[in-house]
Length: 541
Image (cartoon, rainbow, N blue to C red; front, side, top):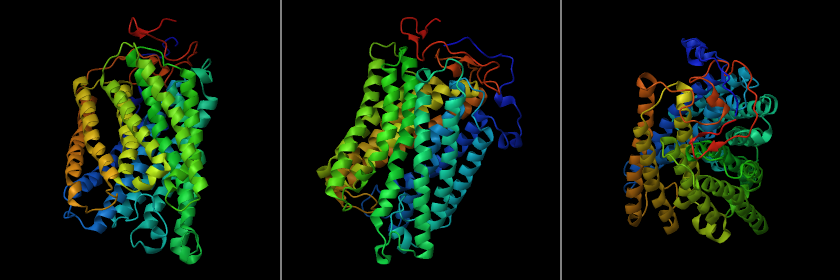
């Protein structure tokens, strides 16, 4: 794409001060990405412990491990932590922070101090949220449905929603930073249709963050007002409307699914052409599909409310729009498949994660069409079918892509190589463990097992045992990368500047990169993803 634009003798960003203060006061987007990564990883494993307790409870039908009330607090803790403290910030705040400036040839994000501030706000929100869980927990579910959350729950609802409210400001600042950076700091020659698809994905995600997150903040503020001041907003006994809360909550929370999935699509769009040694098939369609998903995603929130009593005509419109949003998603899956066709495919660890993402996201998307069908949704609402569906999208999709991105850019971030064999073992173990965990839940939901119950009829036990067994394999699969990636920081082989022979601007700097990314601003003269499948390397200038 350009000539090499760094001085290999330059001081890399990891060597620019080793004290704790130098990290906690840094304005370097790459170091801030590490701060997010450490924080997010810690929250991920806290949420994972709650998930493990849930699966242990469900291994037997009687509900003999924890009480019903404790079980309610466990699944709420798992949902709140995983959604707002891991899934939403994971790829944008870690990989996006590290890569977006480098991918567009910039020295940093537009507002470096604001970037650090967003991390501190994230940590503050996390402290409030964890505080609510440590001080007794919350029993409302991660959706905080009213009027239970406003009038009847005796748990720490105010503390938990305060934490989520604070986290929203971190998301808004991150999205604003990305939008301004992409608009104003692209290198000469980096036109919109030369942008890597990962940048397109984070740009579209940032628009959702900036537009949708204030609606969530407003909704949580109204919830707090009703709970504290007993103002009739959502509680029918006070003249309120509980459906208003659902409309407001899902107006944010369905686009939030695309906050999780769009960056994952961007990661897959970088890894697949690299290890297929082929240009992305239909690049412009891929970019337009990203914008299409982000746009239509704002119009489908009502499909969460098919059995809530909303207008049948409204439900029909939301059902149609839910089918419509599947079209740009299908375009992306088709184009990834076409990119692989006749490619020179290498089944490296990042590629296995990316292929796992495509497969699991496809299954989750197809079952989303099942739930978008009005008649079927009446039967499947609030069953384990819904649980399986959104875990295939959020966990099978977003977490697989996040791990794929970490493995793909780990040599760039650290200057070290991890043991490739262990990377492949972990990817396969996670894929197998995930399917064993969540595919039986489709069957459970189809057979009628409701979600959020700690006891269930004995005929559902076999599928629950399979699900719990899969969760144990999944847990080991998630712990493996933590082990060998930490090991690689100290003992891994030194990485070349471009170990994958990739074409992006970020690979044209040293590994790890210099503090200011580029010693001189690069000039971009050609499109992205110009791979030569015959030689297995980047196409010549």
